[in-house]
Length: 270
Image (cartoon, rainbow, N blue to C red; front, side, top):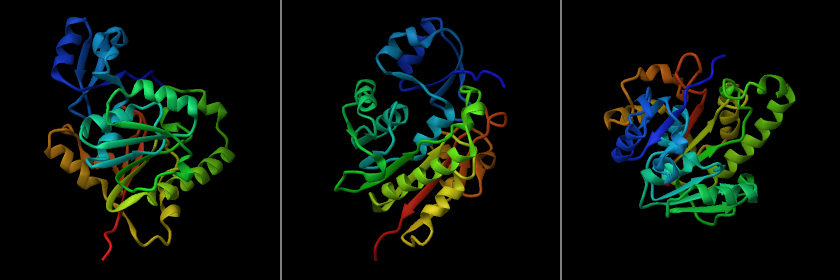
């Protein structure tokens, strides 16, 4: 019921110094060492923002993109507006990052917003991905009800119906199955939503994986521990971010939007 604070992702120390010089007041991130909370000032008017050296992005959204990890070939299935795509590309500067977007006009917008040279934008339906190759890291951040973002989008409370959840789940499962088919043996996929609804989250993941013996759910705890050991995850209670093997952030409990993420691995052949 409260307007959320703006969070940004910082890509270099120079940007921090510039923002301070521009009168932007920041506090440390709650979840990630590369995140900051904006206390005062307009970051959109700064040179660092115009040049893409900082990005406005909720901390839970940043965490989901960070969970994807590192790989040589990376696919973002539902990429627009591109915040997660850009973060993954910067963390993997020598990798090929493919960003798929259904609507051509959003794909064009995505090309303009993602400035990293290793990003390739493709206009395509994520339910029928056009790639002949496979990827060792995939993000399927699927279209969802957005109930984890009610503080930013209160109109959802009046717009959403039960029928919407059923329709969304069908689409989400189709996207997840399509993305899994593009996953290299030994590779990992992160499925995510900004929804609080089980139909769109664990129920959809488990339905998509039913009978698919070549895939297994990876406990998000292991990646969160690795991020903490590497200094990227702040000293938070990791257990509070988990619901079974899944990542779960909850507005009011965590200082960010409500996100869900599942990590899925394709077993090596042999």
